Length: 73
Ligand code: SF4
Ligand code: SF4
Image (cartoon, rainbow, N blue to C red):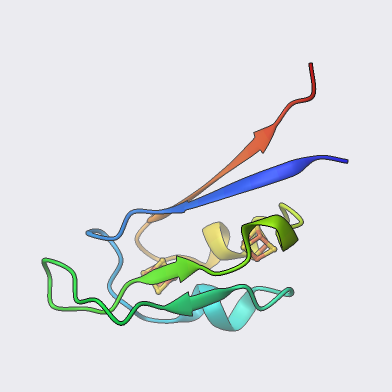
């Protein structure tokens, strides 16, 4: 089964929470840390539960999220 890695660029994120709201697995949360722009960025909580649907990346208005698929050798 494919595994996915979600990366949020913590300094691009503006904390709008759209990714958190639209993730069907509810595995994104807002950080307790503040980024360089003064926002609490999104972060992944249970990477292993990601299904790679890309909803978070599509919804992000700032292109702060990238999804990588781990390819089995
Ligand atoms: S790719 Fe889909 S399941 Fe994975 S974090 Fe984004 S919205 Fe959630
Ligand atoms: S949708 Fe993008 S800008 Fe909004 S909280 Fe998620 S990563 Fe940050």
